[in-house]
Length: 446
Image (cartoon, rainbow, N blue to C red; front, side):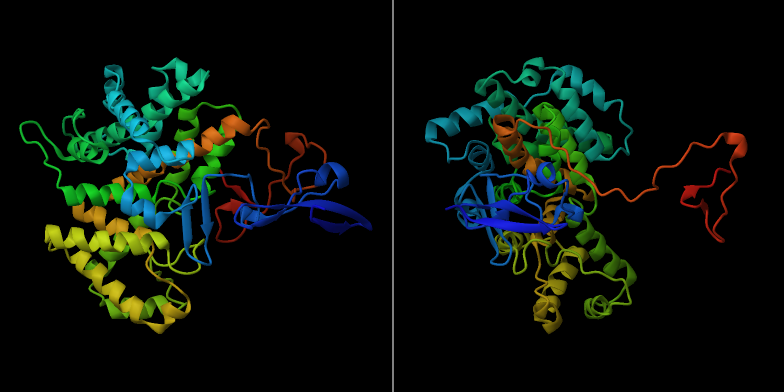
């Protein structure tokens, strides 16, 4: 007999189904609770709410486990490329040799932008943030291919997925070139995914960038480790938008906007800003760490700890080795990178951080690698978006194939009870709060 849970509300008892995932995760199905009882559940921030059933990514934060389609991230990082990882996430299985060749050819075929799109970059200011440009251009790209909006067949989806995955890096590199006033660089069909991106980022007319294999490998690793991470803010946003019937490009453009938020995709940027503060202020790493431990200082240790992982971030163990290789290979003398190494050393040796299990996470090391490669700070979140695109596409596909109802969360209303409309000549001005620019919660008009 299937396991159930009981809930008692207002003297009545309700029986709720229990759902068990393939990894033993247990959930209470409340999808019919409101219809049967008039009651909803409240979970601010959805921290304890399963918004969907998904077969894409599994995370066990307590044990430090991350698996794409059942395969441990450690194995994927060691053996897989970014295009192969994208296929795995989107289609559920590792590709055969023929499938991978076909997929790679599709990515190459769709790497160019329509010439009309390049004119759009002229309309953005030179200081425009690349994330704003990326989101806008992803939506603009869809207007040149109306077939991908209709999404009539699996073949149409595959074409749309390849276009989005391939063109995102072209758009990202063009956004960077626009921001620094350099000519846009076209992709080269003989280069692989990551080498092509570096070429478009750093080549200039009459002086082409020659991608170093170790740098390409490190960049590929960053993208692979960020390819999906279960129902985070941006992925949930993609699924929410997809549930309305919005096309793949519109849904993933919304994911870019969600990722732009500093509490989500800005973590690796915050790491570099922290390191810059330490260098500029002249404070020693040891003194900075002591300030972090002082709860009254409001000083934070960025790039350490993780909301999901209660132990070590499994991605951090992998990417740390890549960071060591890149820094050794490039032999860069950068005070920020020197501080990063010292900070890692001091924090890992401090009992305070060990007890709280505040270990370096993937953002700490990815920020260091990207700075060493030469990727500017405002492109860090863009790199995150490129890496996360396969996961967004996979989640969009899961909704497209199975979700029949639009997502529509409920709320607990806490505003005024019913009251009458007051004509304007009878309204009294509200009392301003001393020292405040607001009047009973409203901005004062001056």
